[in-house]
Image (cartoon, rainbow, N blue to C red; front, side, top):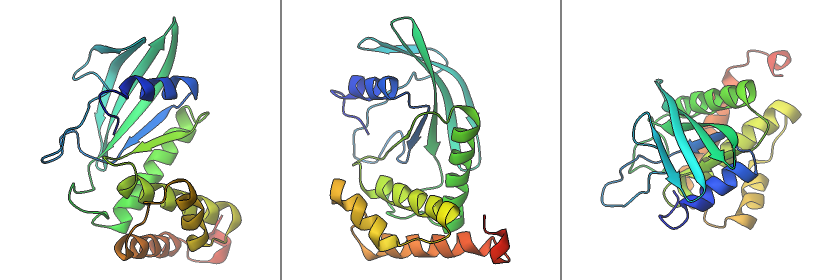
Length: 195
């Protein structure tokens, strides 16, 4: 979650890297913690530095709330979708269900690739490593399974820890990744369907 002093930096990142999708894994309001909202409170607009952010639509899905936003800077407009996860409880380091996480990942991937999948997905949580780390590792593992039909989960975690050492800090998250992969693979009855 961006700090009050880094909200402009977040929108500069979104604009410069043409990020069409933001995934927010924490709640708007965390118990006992301050969060900085970086979008308009309702259907309206707000300005952060040189960036004018407008909310054009809100849709409520089972796993997430989706905000359609526009980011305007120097007469250029970028379309951005902000997905706010609803299934992951605030005080838990893993979601309640691997299937919920897989459904969420699938929904984000579909929206990202179908609509504006040109730039990267920006993922954040409150501290930038707990929930975000789990999401990014699992998304990478699933993508590798899809493209290569083979994956080394420990190697992926090790590679990601080179840039963010705090990710997957405990056994519970490590175990959850394996459980989610098992659930993902159960979707395929035969190897020939795994493509």
